[in-house]
Length: 186
Image (cartoon, rainbow, N blue to C red; front, side, top):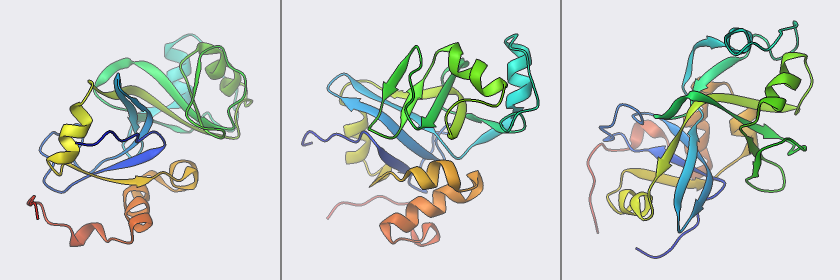
């Protein structure tokens, strides 16, 4: 398959996706290069709020605007580690700039800022991430496991989690219900 860079793209799991980690998911690709790909599932909140996460990692909690925010399942890799997708970029200790507007931060300083109601204007916090070895994602694309579309920060940050998959499909002009679970090649 031809080399493609899917950084700042959505991966939409096709209906035939059998991996339970990715069935009916929308994954945001934060980095994609010849070393592989890293992304976060952005439409799967878990039964954990941000204030409870702060308590678990010994960050003092104040009732800020983020305290009731749900934490999401970001993927099956390092599910004990937090990842903060955010806009704007800011200047945190450990941030991967996805593009000029969106960053992925793994350092505790951003969580400390969020715990007191400061920090980036828009955030999505996950436990875990999704990763692909070199060539693995390209192979999965060739097997029709995913649809891709350029990502939208509005879908990630401004759309309720349960509507994100449909909103990303709308970016393609496709209704998810119209997709077949069977793959084919022309």
